[in-house]
Length: 114
Length: 116
Image 1 (cartoon, each protein chain N blue to C red):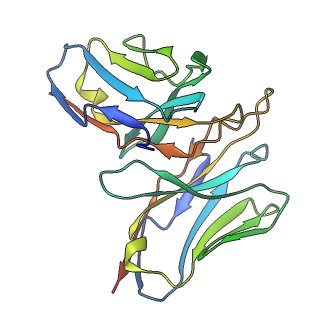
Image 2 (cartoon, chains in turn purple, cyan):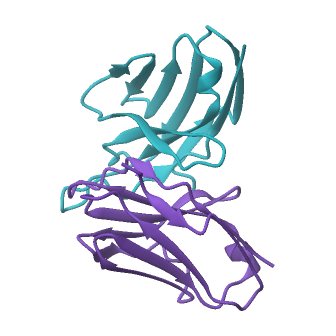
């Protein structure tokens, strides 16, 4: 099992540009999470999908952020337009079952918005 | 408002010693308390978790102690090894109407260094 796969691992972009982060969950897992990690705020849940359906997006900071899960094996997190304060490490994680117990994260995408 | 307070921020322990990390919470509705381990350049990974109906849970060298009345829980790492050097996060969640504990509130993390 390759675990949760995220791409790219690092992204450097300029303010105002569109950024798309990608995630492939563990096969068979039906819960998917996007988290953001910063020094100031720690780990924050952005959005939670169950069976490809967004269940809770209350953590999405602004309308500039959007997430999709078109099928069980792929999800994207898009920021448009990006701002310097979006600089963070973005993690995707997946779990099996409806309990939403978070077990394994991907290695993360380190985003730097200049 | 920080709902889960974690201490210390950093901890240095000698090989073979006991590492202790503490967390305190405010929301009495929290009913699931996991701990995560994160190595540099990696995502956090679930280490061990406890529910408030037990006061202690042990898995190998890792033990969670839980004090419901004090609203505190702690992670003990026995016989600490250099390979345990990582950042440790406590977290807490309350069960939703659908029976899910997905919405975790994380502590700020503790950087553990185990010297050889």
